[in-house]
Image (tube, rainbow, N blue to C red; front, side, top):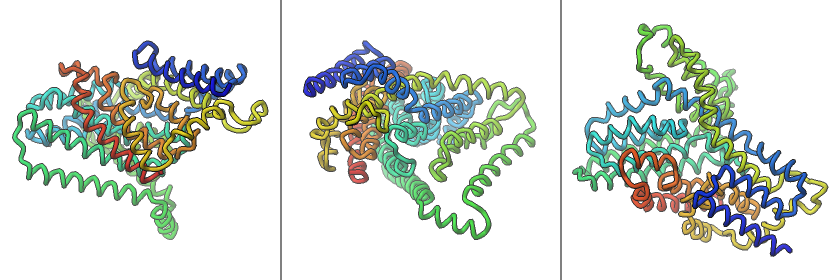
Length: 491
């Protein structure tokens, strides 16, 4: 009977994967349907499917989608007030007319914006500013699309809204996610620099290798210093020592954070008072801190995710304030909910799938031997899941392209369901997180089924399949390096 159940479970996984691959069933429907079918195959009682798989499952990722809602509100507000647009234009003005330097500057600006921004609307808004700038200095259409996709995906690594899913699904903490995410960010950024340099050369531009090496060295040094500062400040020992020092002078760590936020808001208020022209169309430069303020509060001081986004929202509101701006703020909050709703509904399905496989948690009297589906899956997966760093790197490096075309390693397809199976088999949660972030670069940059890939390719008149072949070598190598780092840290 158990062998028959295993065959049925595998068949359901494969069938749903194929249905999503051929776009017969969207992930929004496929994931909840898969969850119910898996629960039925596992002999879960029908009332328990309603109560636990559907009921509790839809709330499983409540923290993640609540954070996504607040993050989306900030994203929409930054678009409507022109902060994101002005941020890009100011950076482009400073970069001169050197194609390579402009590409790097724009990459950095895109990365910075998409640590907070999200959704196709934000992508289109930023792209309509960035793509013409790159075209005007002779950067080719394919290269422009690739640069934008690299920036979008690298920014997503440090988009703390994405971290909430790993916290909810795998029980990880910010302290466990941060070091790997920072290293993966560095690896991906280096990969992007290599991509830009090769593509700019292929576009027919002469490159001064000495200047490029010098500038790259400065950029890498700057990022290394930032990485060192963030990891040092985030270290518990450092925070403990800081706490002792502050307590000696009568200030708590939380009071220091509050003081810093208070000073930012005072600066914003002074800007409102001193501003002479209420009709000025360009946001003040201090509003450019809006997208990175939540990121730094979370990375450096472990501030609650939702609280950090609320601080970012209020700061953005104050630094862009003028008459009628309150209505725009409220409108952005409502629209932000609408923009992120597809992802929220997808999280409902992911939560149901997680509960169907892992169980609702705690002991249930009707299942004295544990959750039936977990008991079926665990012995099988224990035989095939990598048990050492070498096999972990080898297996998942070979399987990394399965993140494409809504494959089983695609986090917005079956990825989190498969993650639940990996967790059930005893694989370290950090290793599962490292796997998904590493192969996620292939999905985020190269996947032709991404709506943003399709839009960008259409906008620049290039074939979306050619974008895949243009970027896959870089993204696959980035994924392999990420898997090596993950194996060292977690295996």
